[in-house]
Image 1: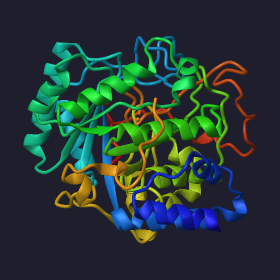
Image 2 (image 1 turned 90 degrees about the horizontal axis):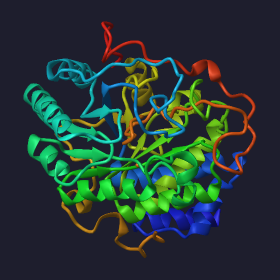
Image 3 (image 1 turned 180 degrees about the vertical axis):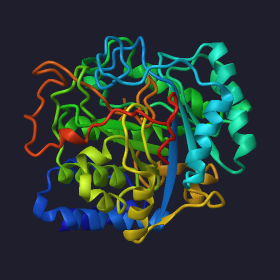
Length: 403
C-alpha cells in the first residue's frame, strides 16, 4: 500500500505526515489492519527496538475533584463507586511505589485528583518524591497534579521529579464539550511550564469519547507541536456514574488504528498504552506492543488492570523485553536535548489516569443517553462492559497492590 510505504519512510526520517495521511490511517479497513500494524511497527523498532518501558501508578488522593471532566470517575458530581481518600503519607506512597518497582516498573507516576496543587500540596508531594528516590535508585518519578501555578514545576524538579504529566485529552475545538471548569489553553500552559522547568513533559489523549477522526488527528498534531517526550494514549473506560457511560465507540481494531496513527505522527516519542487497554483491546493487546513502547503495569487510578504478571508474560510471549533502569528510553537525539520529533519535517499545524492532570487516566465516565462530543457514533456491538472493574486494592486500601 503506497500510503503505508510513505508513512514508514516519513517515520524513519522523523518527518510529519500530512493530515490527510493521518486520517487515511484511521480510515483503513480491518482487512488491512495487520499491514498497518506491521508498517507502524517498523517505525517503532527503528527508534525503540523491542524494548517496553513499564510505568506504575500511585493514586495519592482519590475522588472528590472540583473539576467537571466528563470522562473522569473522580469528577465533580460523579456517582461512580470508586475509592475516595485524602492524601497518602510519604511512607505509604513509597511503599505502594515499591510494589511497582519490584514488578519491573522503571517510572512511578504520582497522581492526585483536583484542579491543581496548593503550595502545601507541592511540599507534600516533594517529600513523597524524596522518599521514593531514597528507596529506589534509578527509578524515574513523574508527577500528575493538575494545573500548575508559577514556580511549582521548578519546586517539583528541585525535589527530584523527572517528569510532569498533563494530558490535552481531546482537540481544542471539542474541549469545551468535555470540560467547562478549565480550558484547553490552561492545559497547554501547564505542559509548557513543566518543559520550561526542565521536567520531561508527558501529555496525551483519550480516545473513544465520541470524537471524530478529525478530532483525533487534531489533538495528535497538537501534541506533535507541543513536543512532549511521552504521549499516553488512553481509551475511555465508561464507568457508570459519570457523563460518558454510554459512549462505547471502540473496537480492538479501531484502537489499534489509533495507536498506529499516533506512532506515525510521533515516531520517536515514547508512546504509552494507558487506561482502557484491557477493556477495548482485550486479547489483541499483544499487537499493540508493535506500536507502543511503554505501558502501565497493573492497576490504574480508580480501575483495575490485568494482573501485573500477565503484563510481563504478554511482553515476553510477544517477543519484547522489559526496559531496564540503566537504559535511556528516548533516542539519542531526543535524550540529548536536540530538536526532537519536529526535526526533518514541518511544524504541526498550530493552534496528554484521572485527575485534572489526567496522567494515565482511568479515562472514566458515565451518563445519560446522548451525552458526549456532538456527532458521536453509535455504540459498537460486542463491547465488553463486564471488563470495567473499580479498583479495590493497593493505594488507599489494606489490600496488596497489583504489580
